[in-house]
Image (cartoon, rainbow, N blue to C red; front, side, top):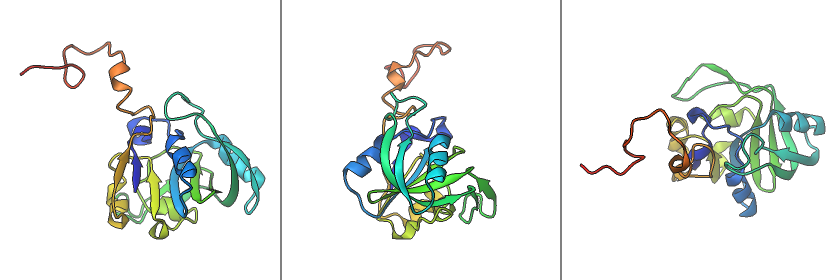
Length: 194
């Protein structure tokens, strides 16, 4: 289980960073799953290509390409198209209906990629199963979340690895941020001797 903490929509990130996905594709991972790229235009492109067909899609990285990687042009097979509605079955929101908006599942090499029209972090296995991804049979699953995924996904993970893919929630950006409305010094931004 790879948790990209730097592009966590629950932490205010755009959810469209591509660095981790780019690395998974470059590593030629097989039978892997990636949740999710927030990209309504890519969803519409996938819908136009149609289930079972292949085509080129410009995926993610459009909001802040300098944070987490720019758009990734992929040759993808469209595996499924949904309206994005699903019912949660896990410990967080079990029984509740959620809606990611029109969504597609793409296969890029050996990686199944969820692409959504409404942003949100992964908190329930149904976010994958509703698109036809079986998380119980994926040796590698990548999610964009810091903690909220754990209740549903940690029980099926052999190991959880937190990844900083350079998105807007990346620790690398905090020291370069100009904090204007905070009294200084303040930990952890400044060294404080106690």
